[in-house]
Length: 78
Image 1 (cartoon, rainbow, N blue to C red):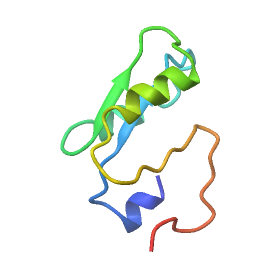
Image 2 (image 1 turned 90 degrees about the vertical axis):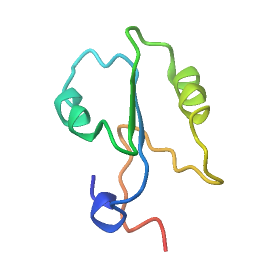
Image 3 (image 1 turned 60 degrees about the vertical axis):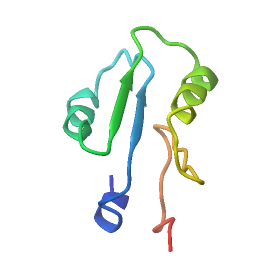
């Protein structure tokens, strides 16, 4: 995650909506702990329901939502 280079203190809430490929589970496991939260669903609950669950954990004024196919072309925060 390239934005980690610019914002290492940013809290991450990661939602794994039962990805059958498990391509990134190993990497996601390295992000768990500290200020970060990782939620794994045992079955696919749908995109909107998973996002609503994650947004329920947000305690900040703003949230940046990204999907697995999101590409950040530049630093999104000033």
